[in-house]
Image (tube, rainbow, N blue to C red; front, side, top):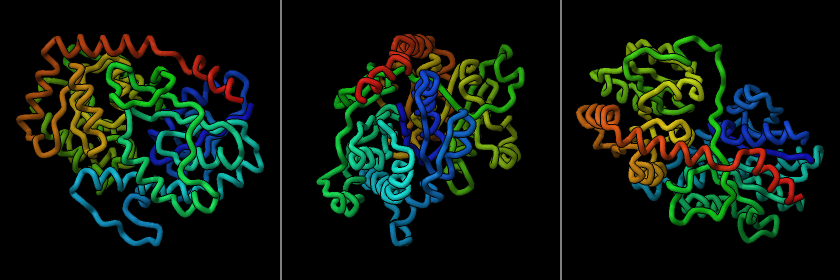
Length: 374
């Protein structure tokens, strides 16, 4: 069977689909991953065959409309979430022709798309093959889908479609206990952390007696894009009696190291997170799910409105604390981090959630459901 995976937006979107894509290839199926240029290294690093269908980074789609004009910024959370939908809708529109050209040459029998890869269901509809929607995180707000459909209206109407086609299978990687009440009726799949692998050093898989805290703002951190957020976050934790590790893309690691004075670099999070007592981060889906999988308490400071609701659910479960932007004073951050490190209830709840993750179906089991669609 030929399975075309479609993703893009950041390396994190590749890491999310890697377990299922790898399981499919290991089962003897042919696999291709179509994505944009900024994710090609992540695809190659996973040992998967990648096809670049766009050289335009998602950040450009976020900041510019189709004409190239800058998108007006807004402080309104609802408008910010809609803008994400429009951005991924623009990305999907740009993907359509290259994807169709790829599909005509390669002839996939099923298309698997990440949560916000709206070109995937449209392509599957054009080809007359099943589409699988694969979650990237703990859930996206419904308004994002609505906005993406509005953005793609010209493309949809040109194909005689009155909306983004429905999927034949939904895969959810979020543990049921922290899913939203209106979550998809979906097949559950265990979250298996994946990321680019540097050569491992002993400190990455071992630890000393001091508490260890990993801090990150995600895979897209760059000057002008969450860089200052990460610098400020690290500064707020400097007084903590703990070993602080800062995870950031290699391109900005040396600059961050100079500014923060901390150990900074691209951390193999699937290895390092297991040795941590606390994760402090931007509430990104992959980082949060990794903490859930390994039973590590988390301090969540959402840097986008769409990340607030998943953070609230994880905090309500008792495995994390959340501080909203604006409330993240040095005292508040340091106090919450200290509480998470010392109060046993957070570790207990985090471990309880990890047991739930461990009991979810593995990618190879979910692959059976994909095979049955064809």
